[in-house]
Image (cartoon, rainbow over all chains, first blue to last red; front, side, top):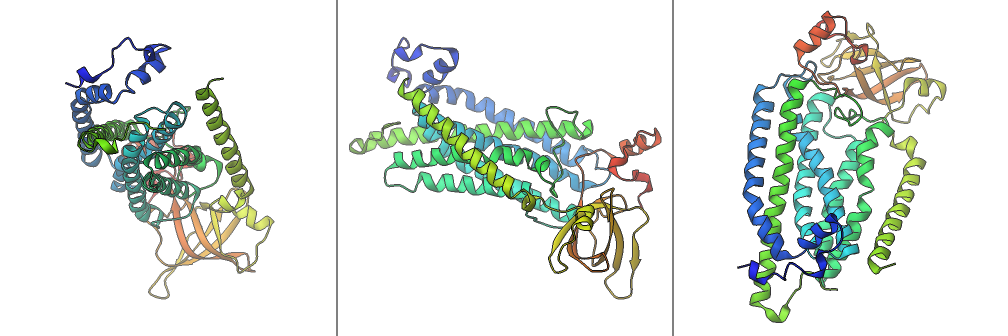
Length: 266
Length: 156
């Protein structure tokens, strides 16, 4: 049914390189919805599969650490949520870029749906980190560069969510939020390199691109499964929310044609 | 230049300017962003005795002494950064990870007697994670990295 509403495939938008063809092709909400509905079950079930294996392996079968004991198991939740917090914000900034520069019709909707999920991941990262900090460091919270920059990231997420709803005109809200998302991207390298640039209570990264990981493989494998699972789960939740948002927009346009809200109106 | 390319340049210049501004601010406040100062920094440039500072370094092996004249134990230990060492006096409960050779951050004030009265002791651990058996095997084969502190079997 959605297919019949689509413009013909040989439209002028299908020119250019593979990258721009892909983004123009799925710029059509109908096509995106169609693809999303097909991809959703694979994404959801693989996310559950990887998260289940990662967490059960990490929380029950991986060895305790030589100096931290069983407390190290918080890592299997803390590290994946920390990665999601940063990469979720990178996705938010990418949506902002697509919204401001190319006026991609789905970018604003995607940004509105990524925001709350990313904020939850950041909150979970802060809470698990705090619970890990108390037994190991002796404190729930310190104002060191790593912890503070992640807290700023959390506030950036909250600011993004509230900016979207702050204007009478929805498009103004999307634009303001996109600008905030792009400005806040400065925080991502600060979070990443805070532990190298300044001395902090938080330890440096165990897994880096340039050096061998300083984490034993018996702990790295469950962590890897957990990270993949959480990442797929994040994608699955955002996709489900985005599909619901597109359908919601369509239903509203059908029920109230006088208040028709196109996907991008400028 | 199409409108899209112009908008893209606006975004790039905006991020570059904003990033530079934030970078300069962080550079200017770099000495305040560091979480702790090292013993040699305190020895070479003494601070006022009332200012609360965070002192970071490694607990010198064999320097930990317990005195239990009241309910709460009082502990003294030396903190070093490899160049200088400062004696820290602390009354209270230490975090689990506290031991000789461990990195710590102590919060408190310096005294004219070149000691440090700590109100809080935080343990700092490194980014190395391994099971106890691996740590023991490393020690047996003589491949133990002294950066990780004393070998695990020597603890407790």
